[in-house]
Image (cartoon, rainbow, N blue to C red; front, top):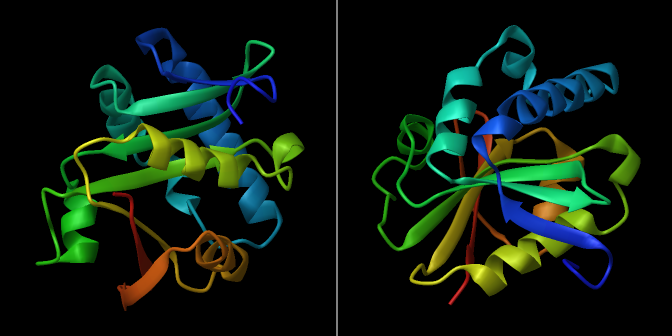
Length: 167
């Protein structure tokens, strides 16, 4: 994906914060407009500080196409408060937690999400599992992760929990 198809993955810089937050809110609005129950809290400014901190911590990545940000995702090597809520005692230092994988609508359904997951697996060292969660009744997103060989390991608080071995 990355360089061959004209896309580049890089760690987000502090000056990307406003663009990333605006993009995530636009995608959250797009999902709401399309009756997809995911990320509604972002529309009210929920997670703004957490998003900014993940960028400062160099845990957020951007995907560029012709110098424009077309996707973003965050990888946490330590579980967030939300991860601890969702995963409970299933917390491991061998896991990487994927958050806010987002692709702008114009680039959806072009294989970018799958390519990002492949990129993560090819560029992560020292971790055994990639873990994530999504709203359990978001059928398309659940199918996306299943089609990308993630294992559904349970549901907590209305969220499907997925993991995949990345060793």
